[in-house]
Image 1 (spheres, helix red, strand yellow):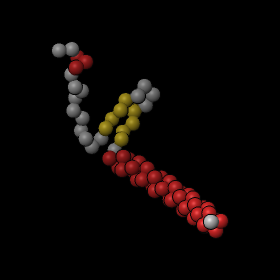
Image 2 (cartoon, one colour; image 1 turned 90 degrees about the vertical axis):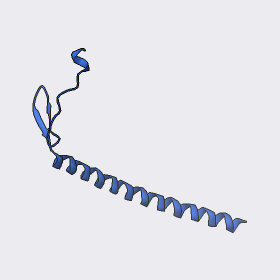
Image 3 (cartoon, rainbow, N blue to C red; image 1 turned 180 degrees about the horizontal axis):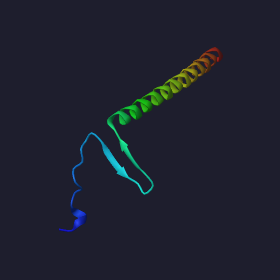
Image 4 (cartoon, helix red, strand yellow; image 1 turned 180 degrees about the vertical axis):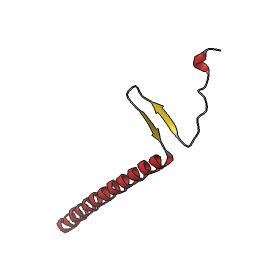
Amino acid sequence: MSRQNVLPEQRTPRILKRNSSSFNFCVTPQKILDKLELDILRGTSELEILKKRLQKVDKYCIQIEDQLHQKL
């Protein structure tokens, strides 16, 4: 069996280490949770912006419907 087909050694799930040519850094579970929390907050604020835009579009559609009904 070639060396490429062998799975890398099992690492501890608490800290994932990644080597780079310029530096080493650790990704801890807390860092992952912090990143997820930021992503959720960003997503929530983006959803609020989209919600406001949809409300404006809805008001505009209602105005157009009202104008159409007045002309008929």
